[in-house]
Image 1: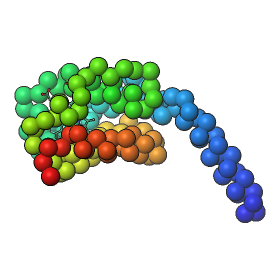
Image 2: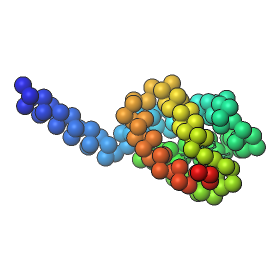
Image 3: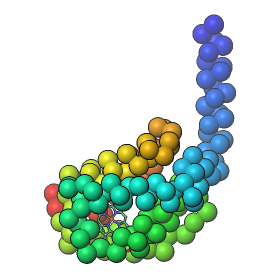
Image 4: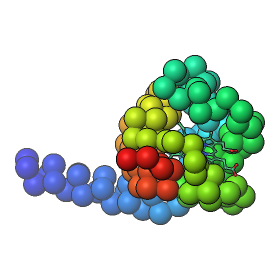
Amino acid sequence: MMKMQHAAFAVLLLASVSANADDALYRQFGEKEGLTKIVDDMYDNVLADPRTAPYFDDAPVKRIKQKIVEQFCVLLDGPCVYTGRNMKRTHEGQNIDRAAFNAVIEDLQAAMDKNGVPFHAQNRLLAKLAPMYRDVQDRE
Ligand code: HEM
């Protein structure tokens, strides 16, 4: 019985590894249409969130959303090119700290939940965003 379970697990694991070699992750976010909706919802959350809203008082939200869709698409192995500015330059001088960063991530998680992105797919995007804290923060 245990052996059967192991064999089944190995098959599942292989299936998921080979699926991830293409754009499976991007498809789990609903491709361009799904991703655009997720980023719209994320920004609705960010602009309604007292922890993050003040950072965006004078910000070009429409442009930011377009650039984030491109950037997330690239991170999800989708067929896109990121045409925005680099993360360090973009966020320089904004006094972004760990609390603000975590708040944006929570607002993204809520948007992914709302749009039915599977939990493990959510985690794969979050794992790619986490190291960007280094470039986005300018306060310890
Ligand atoms: C992993 C986390 C983050 C990513 C991937 C990200 C990504 C981006 C991107 C792609 C842009 C547009 C770049 C361009 O205009 O070419 C942008 C702009 C901006 N981001 Fe972020 N961001 C992150 C975290 C944050 C946080 C935590 C805050 C503040 C709470 C923030 C505030 C802003 C603001 C205010 C702008 C507009 C800057 C300007 O145009 O002058 N970002 N971000």
